[in-house]
Length: 331
Ligand SMILES: Nc1ncnc2c1ncn2[C@@H]1O[C@H](COP(=O)(O)OP(=O)(O)OP(=O)(O)O)[C@@H](O)[C@H]1O
Ligand SMILES: [Mg+2]
Image (cartoon, rainbow, N blue to C red; front, side, top):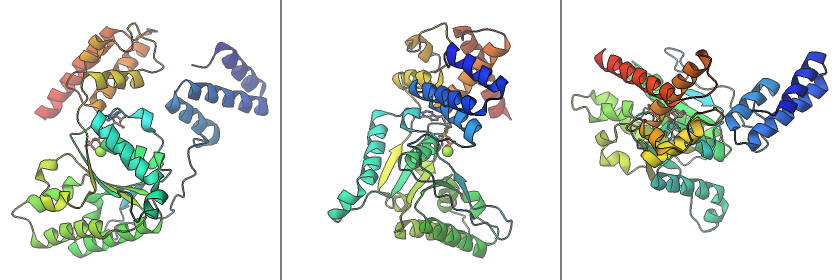
């Protein structure tokens, strides 16, 4: 939180209607928050002040204006996202972190590789259960490489008319060839499942094969990432097409401690941030589940008028989360 002196200045300049001074003090607050590693808060404040994050090392993305749509239903085939989160926002196993680092290095130093006739890996498969960071990591790859992120929704691409599906795919691949970007084929399982299904429609199977072929033949400037949480149903033909496979697993105790340190940043607590016993409360949860529990506990703390987050808030939120899961399973 900004220092008392800055807050006083901020409110004073705002109340006096002194726009220039208000801007300057706001910028100082943002700098202070960024120095404390509160990047999400700093980005949020910048968005309020300028309408978008201005962090000097965040690039100005060449945002393509018109994303292609499915002609039949007029649904966008891709979703363009401005990547904001950075490497320090993700907690990964050592193996996955080092593979990610390698991938980024290859792209940062692509010119050197090319001078030896080599090319950086540009087709990766992200596997693992829900909520363990596949989509987040695709966003981080984009932000670290200063590229826009395009998320291909396979379910929008697949049309009830097979001819239309092929046309949609062609549109997607034309689009991602035009401007370099990170392209995430999210819920890749939607395709893979069709392929694994024995009773599959022959035409659809051909479409699935066409996608794999297109990924295989893709030689554009974009980096392709396919994400799935059903890696077991992918056959060898699929695996073979990717240069790298990154596995995202639920966090172990040490990773949970690191995750809590990130997610509890900026919250006043009654316990130490690296308390192993506290991390133990989250055992078995995915990163996304742990994040949801913390959000729930923080809300509880605020609404009950408390200033400090306690173990009790966390335990109550975990119980509610368990009840939610039981309801979801039961429904
Ligand atoms: N490894 C992680 N480190 C830090 N935060 C994480 C991590 N994994 C997930 N989260 C948090 O949970 C949110 C949801 O995770 P994400 O969408 O990346 O999961 P996913 O693996 O893509 O899941 P799904 O298979 O359901 O698509 C993220 O936006 C992030 O806030
Ligand atoms: Mg995802």
